[in-house]
Amino acid sequence: MNVVAAVAEWFAQPEHWQGSAGIPARLAEHVYYSGLALALSALLAVPLGLLTGHTGRGGFLAISLANFARALPTIGVLTLVVLGLGLGVVPVLVALVALAVPPILVNTYEGVRGVDPRLKDAAQGMGMRGGEVLWRVEVPLAMPLILLGLRTAAIQVVATATIAAYVGIGGLGRFIVDGQRQQLIEQILGGAVLVVALALAVTALFALLRRLVVARGLRVPPAGAAR
Amino acid sequence: MSEAAAGAADHPLWGWAVESWTWGWANLDDPVGPLLGEHLLLSLASIAIGLAAAVPLGLLSVRYRFLYPPVLTGVNTLYAVPSLALFFLLLPYTAFSPWTAILPLALYTLAILVPNVVDGLTQVPDHVRQAAVAMGFGPLRRLLLVELPVALPVIIAGLRVASVATISMVSVASLVGLGGLGGLITDGFNRDFAAPVVVGIVLSVLLAFAADGGLVLLQRALTPWARRDARPGRRRRRAADRAARAATAPRPAGPQPEESP
Image (tube, rainbow over all chains, first blue to last red; front, side, top):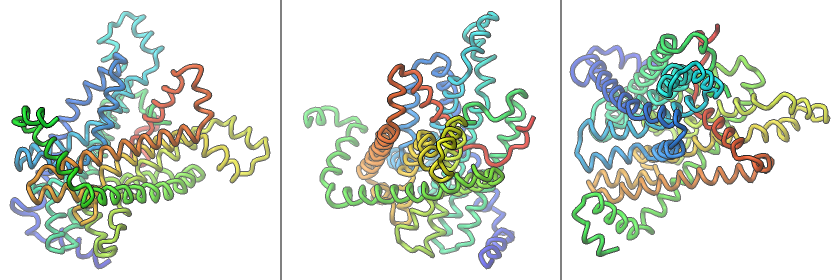
């Protein structure tokens, strides 16, 4: 209980809420890196997943690419890009994009692949062309899995963006890394609590998004994830 | 190869590759080999402990369905805790023993393994279960000889994702002084020298691929019936693979009220 009190006290101190090293500023940095990385990853991975899933070609390549990216140690990628290009936002983004692409790509691909072929036949029978089948049948049906992939990626990115602090960049990881250097357990815990809170907020955001973009008839557990 | 290196050495990427190869080869005995061994041990221990915890948790969640939503929320919340923070927080208790790295990594695997154990067990066809009962199998024998083997492909699919994720995450533990190949990465960062970093990344990726391939082979060895089934047509096995892959992503946290119609 001692520790809990110390963390509560850490949060209660007004100076932790002010200035460029305060909680709001660090949180904003964290959200900025994570959001940008997630947006970039989605721009890369969603079209690739839709294309490979729709055409059925290149699926093996896409999955292999995702597996390769999954195997990359994030901290190694971060360090290597820092050594090559110097400190900045770019290394953090590269490392986080490598982390976020696999879940988005795999889930988008599986979501589109998993659409019942009979539904696609029916859509074609109704006169839809390839693009129409994709946008009006496959994408809506794959939406639960696409969102799941995006959410998994978002949570991983939010949790991992903390290592940006290791190469001297901001974000909530600063509290954790600096807390370790100064032997302030309550500051490490405070930083961790903030990251978990952000991840929970992301989860809530995706629940809301799901309500908005997933067709009402599909709001049962998605077929692909139910297994 | 050396002429080619000389010819293209002006390209920085090629320079990196040659330098890394030379450095890695020259330092194979001193830091590289032992660190690779440490990396392997840390990840194996984490995955084994994670699996040992995930199977009973999964069994309980299947037996008592009401437990599953809170268990899922719990493991997913743990998954969101930054590894760096967990390592630092354990440091005062476990000091620089391997447990500082193993415990957090084992906890992270739960978010991947528990849903897969549960999914694998719940998708055991009812007629299979009934056949086992009719043959006089008690609950324990049914579980060990029928249900777990049938669930094995889904569990192994989860193990594959968990082992690749763990092997790539072990490196973060180098920030508390024990991260296997991550030690090469922090060393390179501290010395502003790319070669160890490249060697660390490459070996870590190779280790992840080896573990993944090893698990595929293990699955083939443990489920001979699946191979026999697949022979008439590859299509069925591919469909099963797809199903298994789709089931491996960590899944929604907790009960989702909007899902009820």
